[in-house]
Length: 187
Image (cartoon, rainbow, N blue to C red; front, side):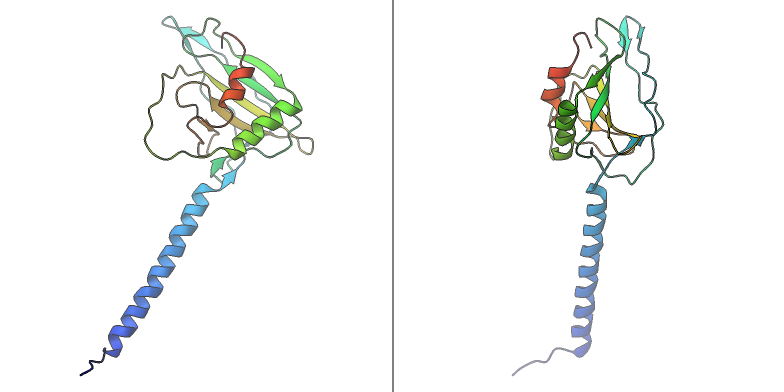
């Protein structure tokens, strides 16, 4: 003998299935929004920050330039910069406790911008080596506009790359080795 399923149960199951599909779509949308890429800019190149000695150690500066508060998401840099200016921030054990300003060529800046774009957020648990606070603030220049795109790259520890109001990529983002090769001695 065959049992029939009550019509109300079928309707309830269909409604529940539709609600689950809508919920899955909303969760996907939120995940997509949180993981999109977005550049961060400053309207002009800020004055280099000042580092100073405190209790025998170099006290590296923290981020202070005023940035445009864009869309959020992960840090990135647009392709084809014409160059970049880098503020090399010393670590706590640096022999010379001052910020070094350097200019990058178009090829160097383009390579670093590509590294930022191609870096990912690494999942899982990881142990980071000692972090002395040394960093590189990279300001990418572009021919078609007057603002600068910003990336804050940590040079020790887990070596993340980020920007104010943006998510980080790393640890050990793709530009770490290249930045180490460009890094001035003593910073």
